[in-house]
Length: 114
Image (cartoon, rainbow, N blue to C red; front, top):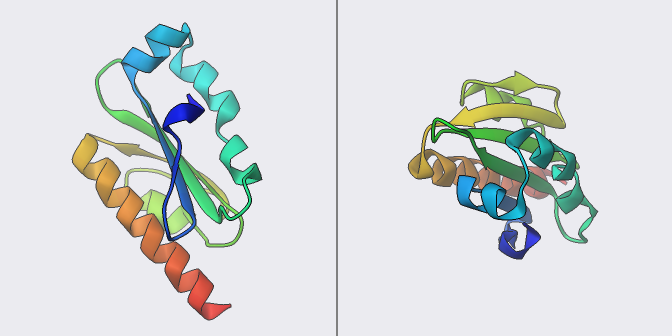
């Protein structure tokens, strides 16, 4: 799965785990949850998000952070949670791209305030 992990210039790591990847690796969407925290171990990653495709084609979104408060962003995408660990939902690829852009802006604002 981590072959597809990307880290952008904003120190945001993101991973999209499709139904095809889940089938190829013989894992369920629930089993993917066990790897959600792993990108945070990478040097230079400030915040990260994992998108897990569900049976209906929508995505379960797992946010994690080492600093920026991410639960308000999760609320904007039918979710919620704690300031450093939250969940949400994304309907499609367009919403995934929107979430990555919003998370990048949040990371930039956090870094500028430091």
